Amino acid sequence: MRLRTLACLSLIGGACALAASGFPRRIGLTASQADVSLPGDLLLPGANVVVDRGVAIDAPASVVWDVLGRAFEPEDESTIVDVEEEDHVLMRVAAPGAPAGAPASGTCVIALLPLSPSRTLLHIRERHEASGRELALVWAGVTAESLSSLSMLRDIRETCVGGLADA
Image (cartoon, rainbow, N blue to C red):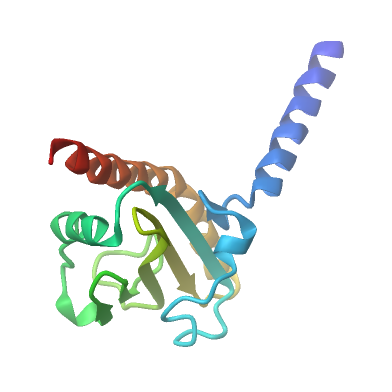
């Protein structure tokens, strides 16, 4: 009985710790960093699924922009809404887990926010509007993608910092 109680209390404690950290709504960002206004926020003002992912990178925005340019090539250029060099890319995206070719129902912005002249915050915000069963599916999709998003951000950080070390 004690082992079962300990296991239950550990699960409850872990769930509370995850909720306190902001997961799955935000990963790698403080609450105040996630609260900033980003390009595209007004394109979907009624979004009820908003997730923020971020990582601080010890490199200037120009280096991070170059790495992003080599890492990402959109499948369809028509999904790009706005690009501001060394600042942001705003795209229309389908809901997570949607079948290939599904219409874009949300937005995603990849923004570079300078923390200092040699340090940049890479901030990715995804916004979707959904209701009913679709809302639960979208939340499940963004939650499932959380670990791969975090891994991708870390890979970008390592590439940016490694590129500076090689130079």
